[in-house]
Length: 203
Image (cartoon, rainbow, N blue to C red; front, side):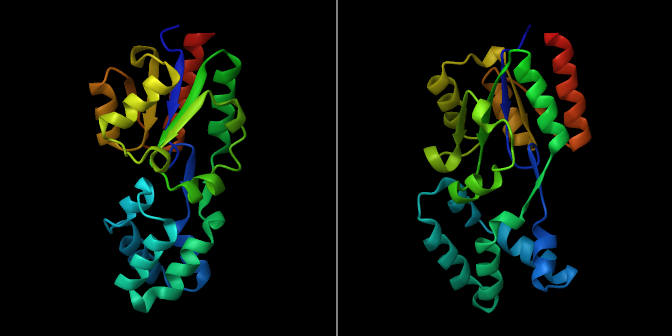
């Protein structure tokens, strides 16, 4: 077996999201929800949530100060984190088959801690993970090489024995540069196929 370690991002890998839909549920039109989406995720301040060098409430206040006419929407967005994630149950089944076959699984993700706890509640194999490195916990973000090295050193895993799945090419490229094979996830269906290929290699 070439790989001993399965390393997984969370967003758009283990979870999909309904950011726009939840804001439509709030009462925004589709166009308004799209503008709100880009206002939040297109702002460099979002990086502060992932790094967590600044307390969560302060960052939310910074968003409100910058967009005062959208205070109610911003508060709704941040206080209803549970409405955002969409579970990928078919992915979970494939990962659990790999775990049953002897692979170890790790998470390597850019994520605010308060979101991460809420969003991963429905992932059934969390208690079977061999470890995780989350940006908010180490104050580093992919594609910074130091967050990958934190994974290797913390858990004593070898990059050449590991395969990483992430939805962003820049994160995949950083992984490969450090000697860890990686696959860019483009769709849920594509990830299912890739995980099934791994199962064939360990069976």
